[in-house]
Amino acid sequence: MANRGKLICDTCGDDNHFETNDDKSYVKCSACGREYFGGYNELLELNKANIEEIAKAEAKKIVEDKLKGILKKMK
Ligand SMILES: [Zn+2]
Image (tube, rainbow, N blue to C red; front, side, top):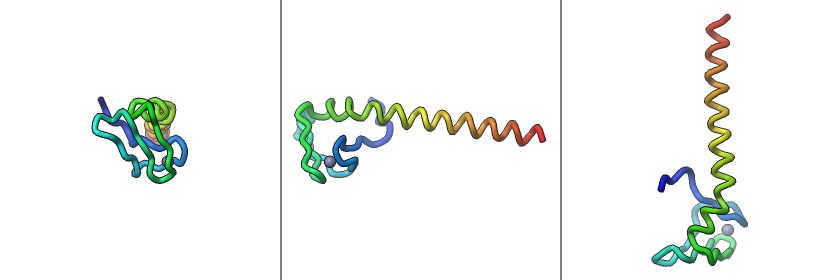
């Protein structure tokens, strides 16, 4: 699976304090104590909206940069 961006805690937004068990069926954020009983998949699911937002923002930026380049050339 492509690891696009970092997963963040749905509660506190931290991305660096996850504790998981061996098969990732349980994840805990040690920064805020949030427990994900659905494990890594639940965390991934909660991050999907986020990841899509980031992807959209990146795509928009690329388009805007291209447009800027085109507009510069027209001058
Ligand atoms: Zn947290």
